[in-house]
Image 1 (spheres, rainbow over the protein chains, first blue to last red):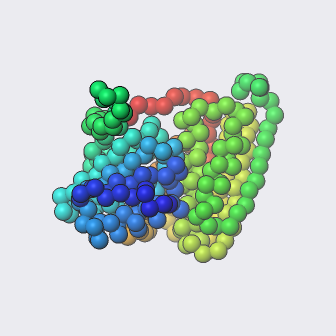
Image 2: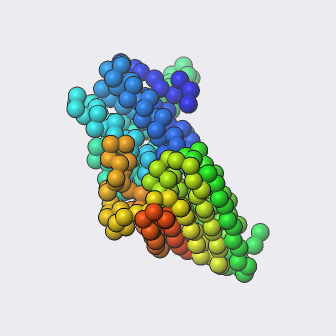
Image 3: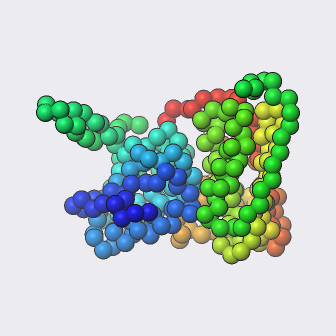
Length: 123
Length: 153
């Protein structure tokens, strides 16, 4: 996975999740995320599932494991752009109550430039 | 293209590969392409891929404990019924009932969710686990394809 897939904005770590998430990818993602939690002192983690079309139970491990770490400092877990498959896995795991769900909203502003905003999604 | 109801023939395939985590995607994609001629729904496709992924992960992580070994997959289609067997010759499961409990994991410190068997059970119609300590584990799953839609979450 490339560097750009991890981005730190203030105390938020944004992780662009890969197309497929299984235990093979999960270990790398968890390890990298933990480095950011320790070294960059990020409190909150945003998991962006825009590109993901497959996830098995290893995805639960990534999120639950990071949740355990950041919640100690009052940090939160955000899940954005989760498709139906990802949502189903997360809801079966019972994790959804610990997650703040967000949706990306693309709009054109007055000058015709496209603007991306995040909206809270109710589940 | 032949429609689902008229598919008369049986079909089968077998696959074996080294127990390495990078082969997990190979395993689920192979099974997914195997069922493609039945024109399954997106949900069924995701169900089968997830169940295969869980079983293969178990074989690699728990069966062989990330050491060398061979994972065997065998699939059979009889009409619209898919039968998948995933087998390893690894260390086996001491207590199958306990292993199948939701959230139970032998490796809690490694981010394991303990949901593997629960997902296999939830996503397939039938699940049977056969295991002998020291000899290996065989997972047998069945699923009828061509039913249901996505349930809303």
